Amino acid sequence: MNIAQLLSPERVSRASEISSKKRVLEVLSEMLAGSQPNLSGTEIFDSLIARERLGSTGLGHGVAIPHGRMAGVEHAVAALIKLDRGVDYDAPDREPVDLLFALLVPQESTDEHLQILATLARMFADPAALASLRSADDGEALLAEIRRWDNGADKGSP
Image 1 (cartoon, helix red, strand yellow):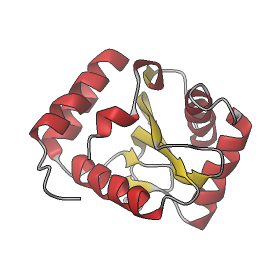
Image 2 (image 1 turned 180 degrees about the vertical axis):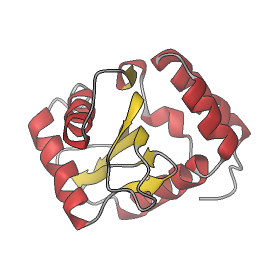
Image 3 (image 1 turned 60 degrees about the vertical axis):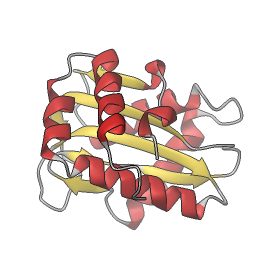
Image 4 (image 1 turned 45 degrees about the vertical axis):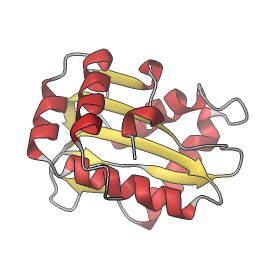
């Protein structure tokens, strides 16, 4: 699973002015909407919020993976944002979240969805990957770090 293929430069960003979970989900929704001509940022936001109501997508260690399956999405697509200051995200370790990887997959895409989430969990469990992402100065550097991780990741595991 190549995580960088889910992203594009316009869907990878560093942000300094976001101070709440709701606002970061709104920004991620707008980033994703730019690649989904059939969906609005509001529809995507509603999907992400509906998933959050089932339980926080915060993983711990400052990371969250808001995600959802949606009709109208033709293939998996993602957005990544690094916050200068973490936000309260109801993460299991109660740490503020500063790295968010939002994921949308087609409504019927259960297996792909789970494979992507497993790969993301593996990446975000890697202390070196987290450190390199947190040291990235801008979206371009963040995307380069994701590509570097993809190139070194064990391609044999889901």
